[in-house]
Length: 76
Image 1 (tube, one colour):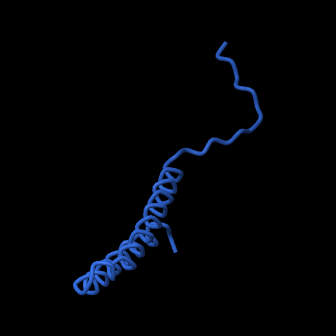
Image 2: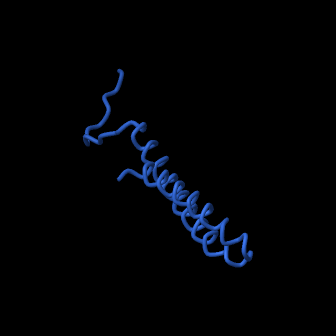
C-alpha cells in the first residue's frame, strides 16, 4: 500500500474513532478518552505517512545524476 493511501486510511480511522468517542462521552466525559487517544495516535501515524508520501514525490521529481567517472572536456 502506498504511503498516501495509508495516510487517507488513517484519517478515516481517526474520524471513526472520534465518532465512536462522542456517544460514550454523552454519558460521562471520561468514557470518550479512549476514542480520542486512538484518534490522536491515528493522526500521528497519518502525519508520518503524509511526510513519507511528500518525500517520495520529491524524489520522483528530482533529476538523477549518473557519475560516469570521466573528466569534463575543456572548451578550449
